[in-house]
Image (cartoon, rainbow, N blue to C red; front, side):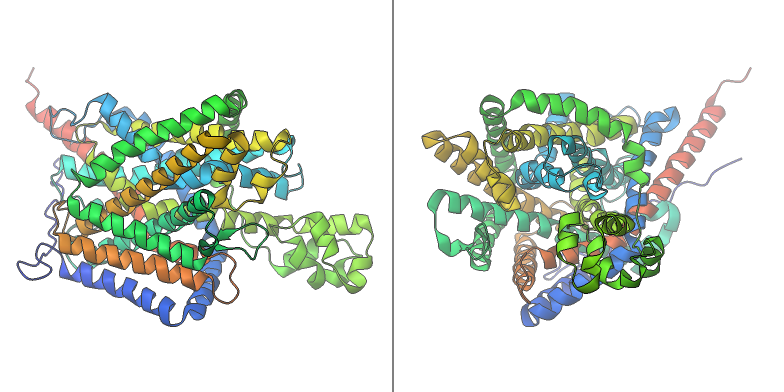
Length: 611
């Protein structure tokens, strides 16, 4: 019996000369055409772009919400099985006898660095606070939001969104890239991960499509991250300077305005392009070191002046609760509730008013009191018990709306971000076993995220629970919550110094993210080559800036209250095709590991001494 050798002859046709020297012209032009088309659409017809993207996004969520939830759960369990099985977990991502490129300390340090990004600066306080007010347990009416009883479920879903599931998404991409690159000497690019399934087809148009999907997903994932970060950067600048021209003062609380967001974006992306052009050794290296130092200082401030005991107690109980609910968090998916299903669940007295009751009863972001106050005419005259039953009938619709708007948004964000983070994880993991890679990259960074969420977010919640904040942190915008929490915790010169430090930290995280994103896009387009010309870094920096800027503007048209809406819609839409690619990556990797195991057994049998 023999098994034919694996296909490893991946060839990315690269231009020998001209502007695209060293790059795949097909991948570059197709990627740019898609993104430039998106920019022009959002620039020329912003209202149309915002409306169409939002509508298409919701239609896709109605059809694919369950797919997103189930496949991310599959990713997590697939990786746990690979790590647990002796024949796959012990396989080394490298040549026989090859050692690791980095020491365990350095490797874990970089894992921690990967776990701390601009997303955590925004959501370390915003995510626990938001989920404290609204999560599936609150939506079901089992507990009231913003109460001590809602704390457990708030952190259950906080850990779900930033825990093992999130990092499993990154590890699927990273493990696939690393395995083929280091065991088969294949290019560090997306198409290599599908060669066990499609073989030489990856050298043709199908391979180009796969790589383009990776580029587009990366651009949109990085765009959402930078969009949130720039918004927080402007909030920080406002906290320091008080300059109102950067802010939209028309709401209940000041929020970054379009002018401020665009000004901040230009500053950040200008610095990012300069950093990218300076080279990885100079730009990203120095910024990463600065990020780590400032992050530790910020964490230390919260440990000393925040609610550290409350945070550590929350950490322990939340981790146990998260693990106990891991399976249901992985596969508990909801679909949209049809009008007929809602009507059938109503009590007889409410059935004639099904159309009037359905909107409020299925609104994931409302409450029973808001549902009652929004009723008009005869429907408003129904008894309290009947209205409670009608509201309960809409729970499946509320659960779907909540999951699609919150959990599925995160899964799409992490999937869109996975070529970026996965490539980084692959680069630093040569010589590691599959088990080491999964445990180190899936679990260690997640534990760091948990610490940030409980120490920073726990302090904010404790300030609200004890009445010290009096609702000011909850009322603040997501990107301002960190600064409002600091204002409740500190005062005087120390507050000013830490606020300035946070703004610097946000800026360096943003520059690092954009810089690295530009590098990843060019790596994919150059067939895995990490050395790319500066002109391409500048071009992709400009395209990234244009995508973010035009979609931020589009998000504010048609009365849009959130400039991030168009960006988020585009990202969820762009992530869907790459989700399919990632599912195929898992099948492909499983096949490759199984076949390589068979080859090793045959090789061992052939070289074993005769008896």
